[in-house]
Image (tube, rainbow, N blue to C red; front, side, top):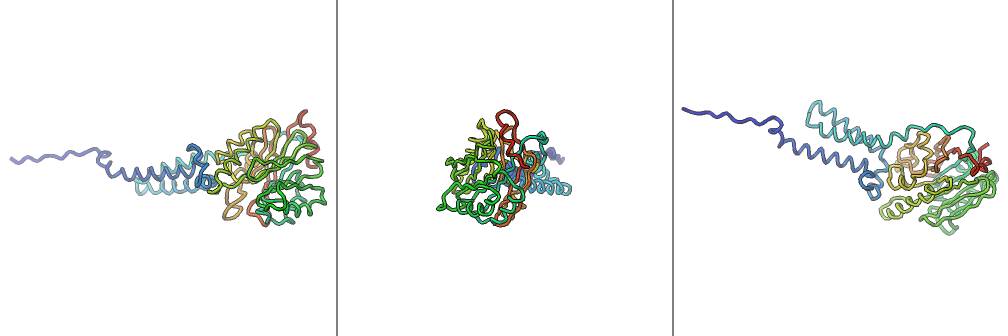
Length: 350
């Protein structure tokens, strides 16, 4: 008698397992790459190093790309279920990244009405190439109390002061005429602030400028320009940005303005500015580009107006001026009221 044996059939999951492993591994690799490019700052400060310091600056755009890829993979699962691990991994990373950037589009409650105000303009003039006449026209139209001009040395300061001097503005550069514009910062002070004190700081690679006294009262203004996170200058960039804590963690009410060469997606900037609020974020414009390698309308927000607790943004606008690869940030700030800040009332814009 011939005996016919019946083969043992493994459960569906067990039988398919050998063929599923390559797909699961590939999905894991794709998800890991998405995590590295979307949230490197949450991986032990990986964003402090090249190339992640550059990549995380574009997180809002990376989130969109990862989300779109996840949706494509999700649609593909209708035809091939094997794509579900890719869709799941990419969509989870996209949602996590979106949770970090979307809150910057939600404005804070407006500051109380009637407080004294200070209007600040920050504009990187791109190695002194920005059109001085256009900058002067913006100042003439907006009448800011204080202007921070990164990449403007003594030579550019002289050119712009010749145009706004008749309005009563005083210009001060952080470097001598022998130094290139790109290595300097210039401050313009409106006449209504009176005889303020301007000091040059040397804690950063590019000397900063600190304005205090007279009608500013207890408020201090600092114009800064940390180095960019290039491969050859990554250490300088980290050190420069970290020094912002000198003002954000200090006891005096302070406004810090300039091209910080960092976004709020950089862990080093978040840590250094824990005591400060960002004017653009307070008004729900924390994702508006101020610089971009492909134009100023698509890129990261690296130009900022920051202020310590008690100083809040009433309004923020972004100006496009010719000759620079940056946009200007114009912020109207409501100052704290009280005995220590009573003298700031004369800084209010008429």
